[in-house]
Image: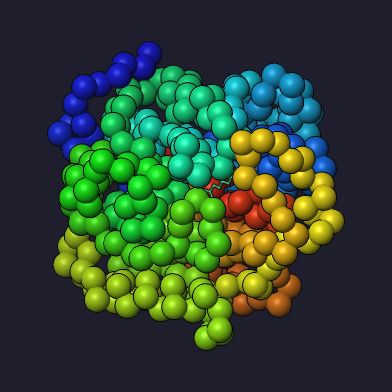
Length: 364
Ligand code: KQY
């Protein structure tokens, strides 16, 4: 049974844990819409399946699929992966799904943020988003946990936490008038404190160059553990990403986290730059209300968009020239987890990556 509570996680002693803390489960959504996934979504489905199988080695995995795709998803995936029928508009459960919070005494609840497809009527990526808006509530219902309805538009990919009171986000996204135009920075910080239990917000500036989410932090930077942040990086001064990453590093290195610690920044080279090819663009259906794709568009590629599983790091393979270096850095950062790369260009073509398509349920 799931009740909707009128209190907040902070008031009730709940906090959002770091992703590196143990999980009970991961949720994903099977891709299907042909105006975002090329060639009838078949290449993307193969990559989503590989991500799910890779995670399922480390933790229980649930795949959501529409009534049209349930059977295909079920027949494609291993029996260990649970497949649940659910209506959605697309496959970004990091953003449309709930954020779970725990109290350290066996309690687990979830936050249901307002979802408007990354900008609503001010440049959102598709219309309508009514079914995605219900995803968090449905997942919460299946999990049988109590729900907090947060009165703020926010996607899970726009925040990362260290589980000890520090929250990382970007001004480009959370202060963007396309999300909560009537809220000030202080108002937004107040909601972040109430609904994640954080006590300190570290504001980065812009997200990865060309990121259509208005610069989600999960494509730019990620907490490896308290006090250590991985940051996407380029040494190419002519790349617009150069200044963005340097600004983020400056802000991180001059910040103090919620416990007063300095933050160590570890850089991971960006792949590419990578661009949408003519052939790839051709395979995507053009539909009114959905952001169109044009050959030559720069892809917002980043290795930092990885999933931190309980025993495995699942990271995107994006560029043969840099994949091995990214893997080696991640393995140094996570010596006790197996680092596994999964081909992810098709996921990238949809506008995000492995972190964006997964949502963990923390262990209690
Ligand atoms: O990166 C994400 N968190 C979501 C990307 C959405 C792209 C929709 N085309």
